[in-house]
Length: 266
Length: 310
Image (cartoon, rainbow over all chains, first blue to last red; front, side, top):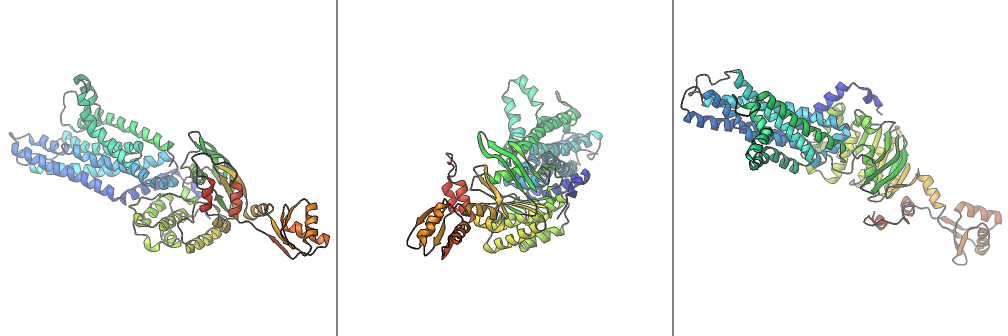
């Protein structure tokens, strides 16, 4: 018979075991591997397509560097979907299959469980997305090698754009995780994600022009564009404020998800 | 020891569990009995923190479930509902639980063997039969070698050999001083498995006692058949003691209101020979029916008649 030694164990061991078990669970989930593979493949294929079309249309030497960055960021619109879906499935999948009951029996402090899932998804998607983004940049640069002398990682600005592309995908995975926690079902979560990243940006076009511009710039997808844009555009926030505002979105949705999880009867 | 105090849950205005108090002491197997919809599962879910009680508390060895830092090492729980990701294999699910609980990985192999799933450990859970699901649930409950076991309908889905195996296993665990709380609507099973019973009817506690004591109390209220060559004399004696006696023929009578022992004693004092004395000993099912009948079934709820199909 086991005595209650568990209660007096240091909290660090508790957190480590919780994160390790969530990471192990994710590694057993075939859907997670597929989502990451699709995300990476979309970035690479779109980078290659965009770069090759730019290469044939290039009019002057020196535009290639921006084109290589563009070839990476062009893929974000599609690659954010598998990243976000992976986030949705991490929490909503457990609600849908009932696996959440097992998780909560092992970790009754529900915010701890949500924090561990968030941490694991952040690390896994960030590593995969950064690798894919830099690989896509390399592919784009290779395709554009004839239009520009130094298509490689030339300036701090270029590195920032590519790195922020990976960061943006990780952010969308976290947004998806929070939406999944709010919706509590896979289907509703994926629909919620699609509304946030595709429907909402289209819908605001129907607003009066002035309001449209004011609202649009606060949408997660627009803030993502602010993070990855090379140079500046009229009316954007810039990379750092864009990233911080996107962080606010994640914080707010995650707080709502935590509140929903805390009150749920499962 | 599990201690439940004033535990209630209502969805809207309708109470599903209504101010429930009971204890499940350590070293004993406590059966938790009730018809479908009586609130058994809701109560067990509240004890382990999956459902938030409207009021009241539940403590396991003095601690609320969420206060346990690594619950699987203190409390093993078998739920009545699927709680495993269908794409995972049994071994994977147990591995995750082992890492979470800080239990060595070789325990996974051990518990799979204990529950008879050693050969199915690499199969996705979605291809499991109902009985295999239940066995996996038991494996999960046993993994952390916990001092308390909370099992929702553990015999459900097991074949007869499985039920015998479960009975032996639980008896062994209780002997080691562990607390076992198991729910069932299969009354015969609880009678065979449990030392004590807690009976729930429409969210309310109707009985909490040791199984023999409960049966004794119930048998005091049941008729006793008696045969005597001097049945009329005996009937007169017994009526004098306050019993209701129905003489059925020249030798037999059915007595209500006295136990078999009291009848035998009365006959001895009066010097009347008794040839047969038969107290119909009720089984738990009959006791359960007596305890839960009478109360009116609220509209929209499972009527008590459904108990008959259990």
